[in-house]
Amino acid sequence: MSKSETATSMAGEEDRISEEEEFLAAQPFDLLKIPALGPLLRWRHARTLLETPLFAISVIMIVEGLWGPTLSPKNLATVLTWVHFRGALVLAILCAGNLFCLACPFMLARNFMRKWITPRFAWPRILRNKWIPIALFVGVLFGYELFGLWASPWLTAWVIVGYFAAVLIVDGLFTHGTFCKYVCPIGQFNFIAATASPLEVAVRDHDVCDGCATKDCIRGRRDPSSSLVVLQRGCELALFQPAKVGNMDCTFCLDCVHACPHDNVGILSRLPAEELMSDPQRSGIGRFSRRNDIAALAVVFCFGALMNAFGMVSPVYTVEGWLKRTLHFNSQAGALGILFAAVILVEPALLLGLAALLTRTIGGVKSGWLAIAVRYSYALSPLGFAMWLAHYGYHFFTGLYTIVPVTQNALAELGWPILGAPQWTLVGLPKTFVEPLEFGFLLLGLFGSMLIAWRLAHDDSREHPVRAFLPWGTLSVILFLCCVWLMTQPMDMRATMLAG
Ligand code: SF4
Ligand code: SF4
Image (cartoon, rainbow, N blue to C red; front, top):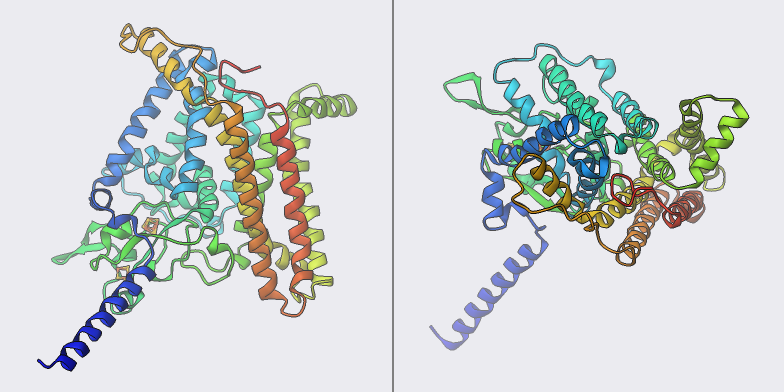
């Protein structure tokens, strides 16, 4: 080979290498390609492996809640549920994705039941929306305040028992993932929160899907000798991978990963909350702008975060007392009901209605005010998520070590004190560490909400995007200031030894 031929060949090789490097750099990060972790998650029993410890912990919490110490800071049921579980859940969603649904202990019980019981009914069409879980979600927040669930191990245990019973009844009667998609309030919380996650279950290469004849990711993989025998189920939440957009309704169950015969589904990185910046047709969901129920979920998710935090700061007692005296209520339920209705129904209806009206009049957006309110309500999700993070993160970090003495105590009461005497002085991280973190979360949430509102306004009003954006930007700032005010109030240290 002459010198010039060698040089040409080397240049060609360099071009090829740089093209390959560019291609690899353009590929999103894929959790399933991480050595050891990827093969573990792709193992067909991975979900059972992850569900089993949470199932065991749930059983321990039920037993401890019903028969353990009656003082909530000393009981595993209350400490784990109201201090650790909620914080770990939102932090996992922030760092990765919907990991709680992936390791859901209720699904372990359900899948075990379905080995013997085959559901026969389809969930009624009229209920195929989010209105039931929204009502249940508000009911859980209301019941938490009214019955003081954080202070009652016994009630906390019955909530867990009730959850198992509800899953088994609903999914024992109705086919597919009915409970997850149409009933579970924790699931809906996770779905809407996970719109801000950095990872999603998604197709690696759409060209491969174009040439795929079987579509096993949705249909399930069948035995070639008998199409009635399902070797691996497809997506029970009706999400068809090539047309799936984002994390809404995705339980991270990985059934699609196991079913795809072309190994074409991964857990891929993406820009957090990117899925809220546009309004494509989504498999199993449709367009967000036509889903009033999911928009209502986003609104309840955001204003519920404010209400849940408001219920823990001292001004709430003043407001409740004033309502009781003024309206002559004898019980707390009436005053609390009015407070919930004001914060979760009336306040968002007024604020979103006004913002939508302004977007229409000064921003020149042609749609009706309700359609505008529905479209932009998704922009509030990041701020709502930030508030849940700030609030639950606060309890999680400031009560982080409480799990140690409570476990020591539980073992000692069983006559097996292998971890020594309970060290009740162990509590958690100092507030000087936790508080900056909380404000960091809130700032990130504000930034996310503003960015989404701006992108939507830019798409809706080419002539006056700033004017279309302003009402939603202002609303985001107002809500952010409310969050900051709430986080600077003295907060009840519920279910810890510091509880008031
Ligand atoms: S994800 Fe897999 S099974 Fe589904 S369409 Fe694509 S290649 Fe086919
Ligand atoms: S099967 Fe459906 S719910 Fe499960 S990970 Fe795949 S898309 Fe999500």
